[in-house]
Image (cartoon, rainbow, N blue to C red):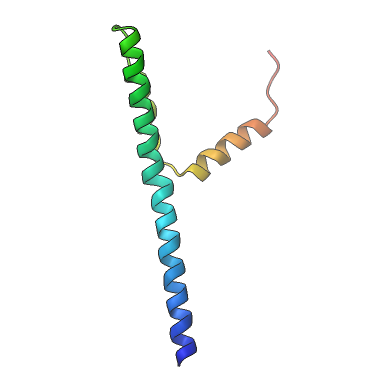
Length: 85
C-alpha cells in the first residue's frame, strides 16, 4: 500500500513540475519578449520621435507558441538548402 501511495505522490510531483515548465516556457517567455520590444521601441522613440513601433507589436501577437516550437522552426529552416539568387 505504501509503495502505491509513493508512486502516486512522485507522479503527482512530476506532473506539477511539467506543468510549471510549460507555463514558464509559454507565458513568461512571451512576457519577457514583449518587454524587450517595448524597451527597444522607447529607445527608438527617444532617438527619433517619428519612429513607428507598430511593426514590433505585430510580431508580439505571433508569439503564442512555445520556445521549443520556434526553435524547431528555426533549425528546420537552417537545415533546408537555400536557393541561389
